[in-house]
Amino acid sequence: MKFIEARKLVHEYIRRDEEGNVESIQTALDQVDLEIEEGEFVAVLGHNGSGKSTFAKHLNVLLSPTEGSLWVDGKDVNDADKLWEIRKTAGMVFQNPDNQIVASVVEEDVGFGPENIGVPTREIWERVDQSLRDVGMTEYRSHSPNKLSGGQKQRVAIAGVMAMEPRCIILDEPTAMLDPHGRREVLEAARRLNQEKGVTLIWITHYMEEVVHADRVYVMDSGSVVLKGTPREIFSQVDTLKKYRLDVPQMTLLAHELRQAGVGIPAGILTRQELVEALCRSGLEERGGGGYAGVGRE
Amino acid sequence: MSIILDKVNFTYSPGNAYEKHAIRDISLKINDGQFIGIIGHTGSGKSTLIQHLNGLVRAQSGAIYYNGEDIYDRDYDMKKLRQKVGLVFQYPEHQLFETTIFKDVCFGPQNQGLEPKEAELRAFSALRTVGLPEKLWYQSPFELSGGQKRRVAIAGVLAMEPEVMILDEPTAGLDPRGRDEILEQLARMHRELKITIILVSHSMEDVANYVERLIVMNQGQVMLDGTPRQVFAYYRELEAVGLSAPQVTYLMHELRQKGLAVDADATTLEEAKASILRALKERR
Image 1 (cartoon, chains in turn cyan, orange):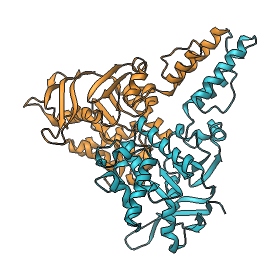
Image 2 (cartoon, rainbow over the protein chains, first blue to last red):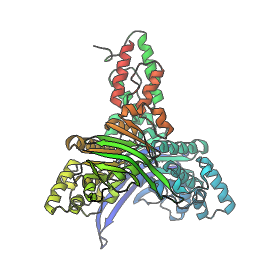
Image 3 (cartoon, each protein chain N blue to C red):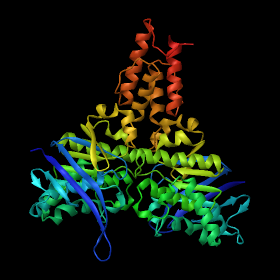
Image 4 (cartoon, rainbow over the protein chains, first blue to last red):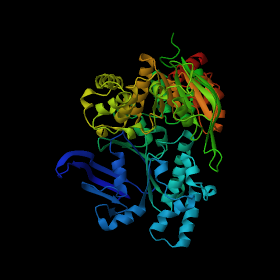
């Protein structure tokens, strides 16, 4: 069994009127099958209302399946006895940096989780030290969280999750409310945890640029997984992504359009560096004679 | 017709331990019909600045003139100003509250004291402008998608027929298509209704693509003010204050360093594409 495995996972939001009769049913997850290996950096894309967040909330049992099953580290989310174990395995970071901080001092906020599950005091402090170091926030440990920037608050939130010693962190649009600097800060902190500590990352986002370094990308649409693959495989399908209300990173789009205009560069370019290298190489080839169709024709 | 800010200062909690000088000595002129972007890192004073423009926050010193009238004048009609200068807050969909979309959009104009009939006409036209399908109008606003809710919220402000519309990060949290739809809508409103639009954004790509003038805030002051091309030429200075230039600007600089004669100041994908194709052609 894989670290995370979903089999025919269904979730319906059922609305009832005052007498308890069913008013409407909205299927948010529709027969989702999905596997995630431990230690992977997995990105989940999808338009608003595609089911990303509903799926994420199943991973630490904030929601339970209507039908089907989901196993996290071999534990079935339908098994009520395993609830707390699953929540310790899989921690969650939300979008808004301002509504997930509970204490008035950074280190107390990070210590809240372990204290809540009865970790001995000395170990709480060890975990707090370690977690703050992991996200690079040690120097702010005695600060008040409300004086921090958005990116710093999100890193404190990640430290709070890390203090629970999870094996998997789910981040549901953690950068949506941040400025560019804050976005970079949070992404780098999370990737470091993935690379150095082997924590599985499940990263939900609308920013295509953040997905470039993921091991695997899942694209969701109307409650189902419609595409999966490496970032290069996913982003080579520019038109399919547009159909799902998504986009490709700007560099990929530019490379795609240059190729269509006849420039001799390879398909599937993801980053600026790749595009610079490809264009320089294509320039050199060109000097040696020859040329491309579409460029330089007058 | 314009908004003029003359040496505006504002400090939060003056005189106690939490004192924070949010904006200092800001002097700006915002001409009629401009499409302006404001960027700046969190805490740079952007939100405080825009709240001054419709009188939500009162400057401690300095003056603001709307169409030549001092808004801090004792006889000035502040309520009128707030109708003329519409403010769409961050996550405006959190402020929807009525039972149907149509009623929600009617609320603003009705509150202005218009006859119900007139308010409804305004709501019709506003909902049509934001492009929300008519079959949804009499549904609850809470069943819409994020992007649709946001359009309803924008329609609510539009129905007051403002001359200036200020939007604080109107695309935050939207999927790429939703983002493009909202921005296209704003561009169209700007073009067709000739409204002045002021867009606060964290996306350098978005401002590069849409605005004609870009104001950069840092530590409560205007750090740069110009066209996106002019502003993003200072990409190193922008980085020093936690901002950046659009990806293509970096690409162009790197290509120049490698000896490809591209236009280093390109800020949009179209400009970059044209310039790269031209440079490759010249190189032959």
